[in-house]
Image (cartoon, rainbow, N blue to C red):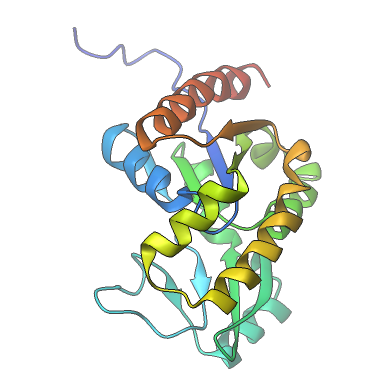
Length: 209
């Protein structure tokens, strides 16, 4: 049956996913965009150099530190932070235009950011009805043994880096009760099924707000 041109379009949804490194946030975001029609991933911004295969404007907006800070001063970021690691200080953030413009056009979005970024989004949402109606926050909880095993399986981090990430993860886990929903991470399939169930609720909430 063809779509009814007089039907009210579905309210856009913004799913905000957070969780410790190794929780599978990016995998969940990528899979939702690939399998659920009507979703795009929010393109965030960083001052780190592109990795092999990364495309500017697709994986990240890659800015120089000067350009990033200029836009911070101009008030163009909805959230941003300095991240320390690998002997470098990097800047990461989300441009207002990367979130608010698509939502205003009716585009549903998913994004993965840290807990500080989610706190910033909540503050902005208090004064922005569009963001407040669309946003649903989800925290991925992973038990300590499973998280360490995942980090070691990636074979990208040294043990001292894993220890640093675990300390960060423990601080992040304390923020989990502040989120709208929590997923107790198990397998990729179980996690994705849980996310789809949350999406269904998020759509109902967005339509009712």
